[in-house]
Amino acid sequence: MTSSLTTPIAAALVLEDGSIFEGESLGHQPKDGIASGEVVFNTVMTGYQEVITDPSYAGQIITFTTAHLGNYGVNAFDNESSRPHARGVIMRDMARRRSNWRSEDDLDSMLRAHRLPAIGGIDTRRLTRLLRDSGSLQGAFGTASESDLLATARAEKGTGGTDLVSTVTTDKPYVYGSGKFQVVAFDFGIKTTILRCLADFATVTVVPASTTAAEIQAMSVDGVFLSNGPGDPEMVVGAPENIRKIVESGIATFGICLGHQLLSLAYGGKTFKLPFGHHGGNHPVRRIATGTVEITSQNHNFCVDPDSLSGVADITHINLNDNTNEGMRIRGARAFSVQYHPEAGPGPHDSRYLFAEFIAMMEGK
Image 1 (cartoon, rainbow, N blue to C red):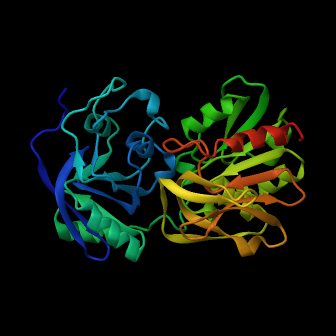
Image 2: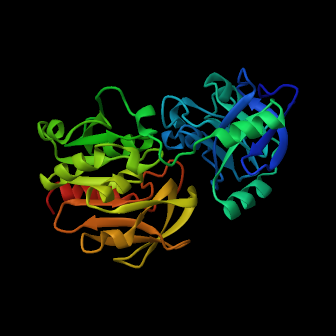
Image 3: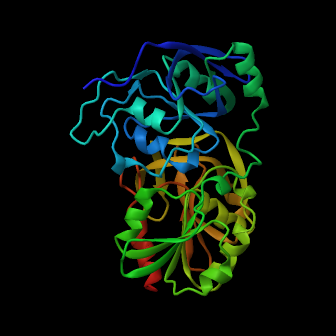
């Protein structure tokens, strides 16, 4: 079946350092001919739909390092949220045809339906090398003039010092699943695959990021889950204080990604921005207790300084690419967290055991 791709329209990507990449416009066409944001790269080979609909990409433009996208189409089940929150998508090539029994539509049509701009024909190898050497850069792409694209890129503020969680969190609580345990999940940008994993054993009440500890403690709760999410953890005002009160009340608490960072801030930890972040489904992480290596799914720009948690938490996992902190357990408390995504949507399932650890903690084992 052919896709909705039409005659190519020339477009360009311009980064804040003045680098220019020529390509062609795909997806939604903005009225002013410009899409802008912080440009990052993701190394997944499959799972482009899940990546594009991950709320953690709010404020960012996703560069896919794989050679082409769209070959197996898209379907409603694989969406990780109701709509993409990314600013745009950069790719080398989009497949002209889709072929998969699960396919319901083509990628370009999905991008258009969600008003998400994209650019193809880009030398993504050159772009990825540049981002690895320079760190994440602000960029703009589209059909506007290169001078307008450069000015727009340089006017972008980036994800540091910006509250992005408020743009993706739910407006009101809702219930997902009907399992044995009662779990409250803070929505800092939660993904559907996470909810499916939790629903295997819990009735999950998803609450807005601004929910207070008092509101949680007034509920019948076996455990609290701190979700992934976009941007700078220090900008999620009030969350660390509420998280500490929840943990100190004795409720079993499990955090991932942004939730890991917020748990660290709750106990006086420090966070810092990585040069180009961790985005992909192939990051090796060593589990210190056993020495085993997990291949993990990751998507974050910020990281926790392990030295800032000295005497407060035990480091449980280490990233083998750059030796950064990938997990911890708070001493004397029923709380632990990891920097990566155990639900792995997309990615390997090496880390699904962490949900079993959460169950054991809720059971008091």
